[in-house]
Image (cartoon, rainbow, N blue to C red):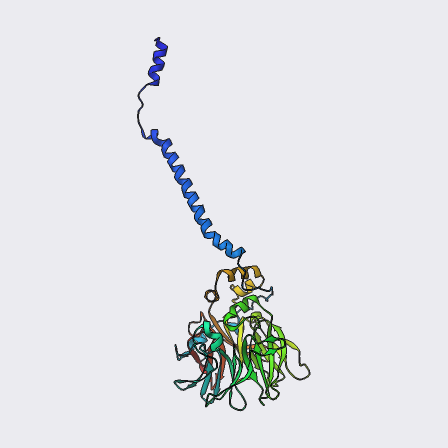
Amino acid sequence: MNEPEGLRFRRLNRPQIITDETHEPQFKSASTYSGKVFRVTLLTLVAFLLFPLLVVVFLLESPIQPEVFSLNEPPLMTGCYEPNLKLRQAERLFEDLLIGPESLANIGDVLYTGTADGKIVKIEGRSIHVLATLGKPPCGSGEHEHTCGRPLGIRVGPNGTLLVADAYLGLFEVNPVTGEVKSLVSTGKMIGGRRLGFVNDLDVTQDGKKLYFIDSSSRWQRRDFMHLIMEATADGRVLEYDSESKEVTVMMENLRFPNGIQLFPDEESVLVAETTMARIRRVHVSGLNKGGMDTFIDNLPGFPDNIRRSSSGGYWVAMSTVRPSPGFSMLDFLSQRPWLKKLIFKLFSQDTLLKFVPRYSLVVELQDGGICVRSLHDPHGMVAAYISEAHEYNGHLYLGSFRSPYLCKLDLSKV
């Protein structure tokens, strides 16, 4: 072996010095492999989670078919609408004993209301008595609401009886002493080619000959009221019941969730709260303008429910949620985005959506011409929540609710 070859042999077989650097390539290889496994696992997990969502978005049908409509920019909550805490001075009555006392009427010092479990109750002092039930048991859950009944609007007729609008069963006359119930209009009756789907509020003339009432929707029932609001279905109607001929006539239609109703003093027109549109319409039901309609007040700071007379000759309008300005109003935002409404109803139930609606109770007193006189607020609904009506009697405002388990009483002399 010559010397160059020997040197080459020794170089090839020279002992290696083991250091940390010797394993570096192997470590990098293992790290790269682990990273790939992590990425694959993460992508698989994301795909696994997204797949059901994609199925919901693209394959499932939305329960609503929203219409595009526009609302004006909400009015600034200043001046007459300036926020305050006046409703928080109200006193809660019969807490956990009255569920959803939607509407109120009084005969002297005795109050009457309808509750979520289908009852008409009589309130005397500190006592509650069940006067009548309109539907059939079982009661007490949304599942049975359509058979149990859900009394909403309630009035005292000129002959001293109670007139009640039940969302599912129709119009009734109830004897305030004996509790005897008489059906006036059944929801099974076809009126103007459609069945009554969501009977809501009512009012009656002083002579008792005409009774005006609301059918909020032919498509949606009361238990689906959020569907009605979000879809903005224009199928609400104002109807007239003639107590002599027993006939029912359509006075106005194509309204978006008509809700509360109140006769004008001359009884030639009625005020109708068009909830979805945040306005109050005036529908002419007799006289020279019969069949016409105009706007009493537009662009309210909230979504109106029932309308009742005030002692000053004006009108109390109850609202269970507002359109904050400045601020963000979800319903205003969604009015121009039907695709987003569809998606929301594919993903969430009505009960879940209600949790996202800000609780802000507002009662506004309006004079003729829709002029705001004063407003009473409870931001966050801490005392009076989900209010549906403000009923004035003997210097106090009784606040009904479509959802809360109590009645509220406010001393007007203190606010």
